Length: 441
Image (cartoon, rainbow, N blue to C red; front, side):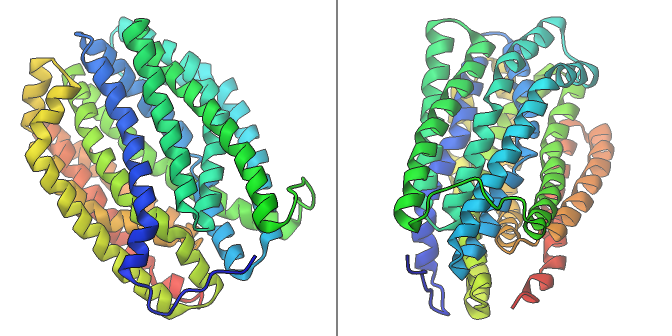
């Protein structure tokens, strides 16, 4: 198979064409959260929304902590693709599959510990705790499938097949929404129904696309995937270093959003529920803007593999500009439809009223955060994971200190102001390390 060649002037049009399918897939992902939140928010009692908020936040933190299975795969695969080393692409996939199975078993075994930690750190009622436990009892078994999906998405992003990676995410999201809605609305399974929805959707999706990927590799690379030569010391060491850096980085970033949930719970279950609603807007914007980051990760790695500095710099400039402009559009849409969306998510008047008072944060955070989202994609494509790790550690630790102080004196508004500061810190710390990527050329 011939390698793809890009001109030294990488156009905005090419970025947009790569990003369009990712836009739709990234839009589908947060819609699952919005639907789940709506299903729980319209059951008439805050405990369902509070339980779902905590349980999904914790499981998101656990699963996203192993996001290196996607991000590490993109960097290595894209650079190997630029070199035309297809055997190394297959070996990278298989190495990460073995790692994913091992991680999944550990998480399933540690499920009782996860539940104990939730009860210790979150101030909730006994009924809410029982609902959280019911959710975890089911959702934990979806981890093997969800981690495998990470790897497959990383593979397709790495070889610039964004339509396939997007189709996978859209399939997962649609199945999740369908199963959750049926189980909650038709079978009255509330929190457990949402968990089963995630479980069924993830295993069906991974079964379909694992088979498709096996056939895709044979057809496109003319190679049959085999578990051989996976234990080359230098390759394993490189994979380990990349994965551990991204693991630490992702652990910190997911903890930051769990921290928002934690501080919200300290303010009361009403604020916990409200922050769950408001975070859906931030997550929706993040996934939408990440389309540029995801689509350019593979090309960033490809340009580095080809040692094409001009193409790299043009790609960086154009993708950041597109991300910021899109963020402004997202905020404008929120200005128009904010109240309507909140009203759909919950029918509890108190939660609606408090949400309206936090309207400003939902508007100003997306444009500010667009820079750090796009820089993340650039660093992932460059496999500059050590710098990503260090930047995130500095940002999160600063965020925790700022949020404790501001929440104490300004309540939930202080918490949201500190979240905005966190996004700014992420951008500044990554910009500080950017020059190290240029040394690869």
